[in-house]
Structure formats: C-alpha cells, structure tokens
Image (cartoon, rainbow, N blue to C red; front, top):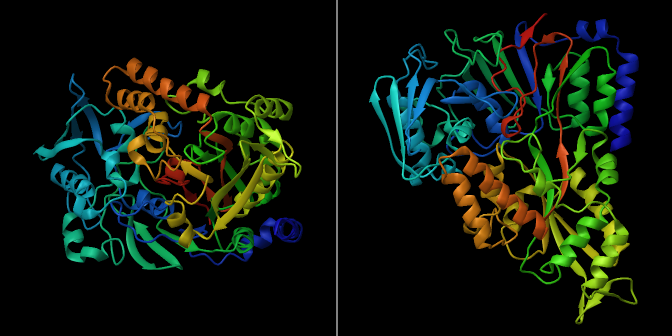
Length: 532
C-alpha cells in the first residue's frame, strides 16, 4: 500500500505539469470541492460526535464563542462579549444583533437557549451533553442577552462552547423535520447553507448571502469568499491525491502520511500545517487485569518501546513521538508530569521486571507466581494501528513480554472496546484542554468507557473535580497538574504519538489555513478563495 501510494504520487508529480492539471480542471467556477475519506451519520450537532459531521457543521452553524488557531484563546463569535459572576456559576452572554439564519430570520437569545437546552435534554440522547457543564438553567433575559446558570462552577465552559455540539440551530426547522433534522435539511447561522446531501457521496452548501459576522480576530474576511462548497466522499487515498493534482478536487486533510513529503515538493499543490493540533495516539492498560495490573509491567512497557522509531516508520514525519500524556501547547499542560513518563531504555525495562520478580521463562516470556507476562490488546483496524502495534510487539518480546493483538473493524470495534475482554487497547482522540482530556479518560465515573483503563483513584477524582469547579485559574491549573502527575507516575498509559494536521490544496485555491478543532481542518474557511 505504501509503495503504491508513493509511486502514484511521484508519477503524477513527474507527468502532470501544473498548467496541464489546471487545464483539466472540471470543478464549476467559484465552487470549492473538498475531498474527504468518509461521510457522517447525520448533521445534527446535538446527536453526532463524528468528525465528518463537525467538518460541515462548523461551516453551516456558529457557536457563542470561537477557539483561535493557537488552540488556547477564546474569541467572540455569536456572543460579542460576556461576563462571569464572582462565584463562577453564571455567564451572561451579550449577542450580536446582526445575525440571521439561512432562511433570513433574525437570531435571538431564545434561539441560543433553545439550541443548548435541546443539546442537554436527555430526550435528545446526546452522548456529549456533559460538555455543557452542570447546567441549572439557560434562559433568554432579552432579545440579545443570554444567561447560562450552572449548579457549580465549570472552568471548562467557554472551551466546550467552542465545539460544534453547541451550535445554534433554527427551532422551526428542527420541529418541522423531527428525526430527519440534519438528514433532510438544516438551518443555521453559519457562512454556508444546506443545499442537498447524498449520503456516502456528497453534501452541497451555498454561500449565506448576508453572513458578515465571522470572528475578525481569526480571519481577514468576516464573510465567505466562495459561492458553493461541495463535500465529496472519496474513500481511496490514491484517488483523492490524483483528483487534487488533476483539478477535480480542491482541498483535503485526508492525506496518507507517506505522501506528505511528495506533496510538499509538488508545484501545483499548496500545503498548510497546524502545529497546535491536539490529536494524540496512546495505549491504555486495564489496571485491574492480570499482568498489566502490575505497575512494574506498565513501567517496563513504557521503557521497552522505541517510540521514535515506530513513529518514524508509521507516520513518515507527520507525527512526533509522544513523550508526555498531553501536547505541551495545550492549556493546563504540566511539565513536571511529562518528566515522569519513562524514556526508551530496554536495559532499564529488564531491570524493572527483574526487580519486580518477573523471571525469564524457557520460551522467552517472563513468569511471576505462575503467571506468564502476556496480555491482549484491542484496536480499531487502521493501517497505522496495525503497523505500530507490530513494532510494539517486537520491542516487548525483546524484554520478555508477550503482547497479543486483536484488531476490529470500526463497525463492531467500538462495541468490543466497551467490554472487559481485553487487557490493553490503542486509541487516538482530540481534546481542547488538559482538563477536557483527563476528565474524559481518568474520571472513575466514566468506567467502563471512555475510562477503559478502569482507573479508580480518589485522589485523581478529587483533583479533576477541583480543576473543573475552582473559580481561581491558578487553583484550577494546580489541580489539573496534580491529576497529570498521579496518572503519569502510575503509567496508566503508554503515550505513542502526537499527530500533525496537514491540509493540501490545489493551485487555484488560496487562503487555506489548517485549524484543527476536534480534528476539523477548515473550520469556517472564511479566507478561502478561488483564483479560477
């Protein structure tokens, strides 16, 4: 597969001059064709967690606040300003007065209250309603003033309200379409409006004619520069790359790692990278299962694996080895916790196992109290996962640990990952802050999923609660740092890689800048323009 993609890209670069590629372009004038790997299940922000849905929802709708490209700064969006009460429980948002839905109806505070209340309503069955915080009441207190009252402080609120789940939608359209909202139609306040959706093929948007309220601190243009956007599903990576080179597609973030360097050298392709991309790969251990319940085994695994080599072989320079649980650029990162993650040292791994009583067996696998040092890891079937697990398996075997691998297709894999059948698992995930990441994965209340490690530690829970509820930012920072140190010292995970986000665009496209929120590259895309 790697040779096929690489050869195809090199051939295209060598045989298709930039002028010829543009001459072959078949895309309509002032229509941006976005190529992506898979579709989403639906486009209802309250009822989907798919990155594929978020890609389009950020263009079709807006949120109260926006997250800047540094992934740390909160910017005004639908709310032009806000205040927080001294006790941290009430946020008062003052809304813009010039916002309309795609059908022309003016947006009011009632629309915002309806949208977020619908999101958190148990009847909606949103899997991420917890992200809205411990809501007491959300109410409109005027046409353009919203009060967001919490039962207790929630320091993460503004960051969470940047995510597409908090998008404002039109109540009339929701009630008219019912279960088919986001399937047969959509009405939001975003820069682009729903035209049509052919599942697993393409979704078509058209320019919102009166949109002029894009985040000015983030974009040069507050209005969209393109008339239409087509989100086209192109599952085969080689086909996506060929389409990009021959003018049949304009932009994609779905680039095989092996093709990135080739694309950087290709004259009719532009590349944009987001350095502050919070999408990490890790291996997690079920701490109450045999073998991996031993902290010494988990530490030895971290010491035995050559992360630098496996990341280089798997991602070809489009990821960096993860030497900490979190990206150092994320809000709340603790450097002291990062220093607790063991570095690659196979001899140290052998000493760790020896000192813990794990003796080498005749078959090359260690034994302690009659228990062989063997464990089963589950993962979703991806080329990257399969490749780096084989490297981990080889490294562990050299120190006397046997790792068995079971990969699952995503259609059944998520269900398998919610069971107790396995001892360890691999995963990749997006996050917006340190508290966001750790509250999701290490809170004991989230067992058995997404806390698939069954990590149940009162000190961690107490630190996470303080990080979420403290009003003083310094207290919040100290609390989430404490949680990071507890988990890192226990080696609950083996951090693997921090993936980079690259976006490739054709020669006729200007203004593409990779964003990365929840894995989404184009975000609003307000500066994107077409020269031909």
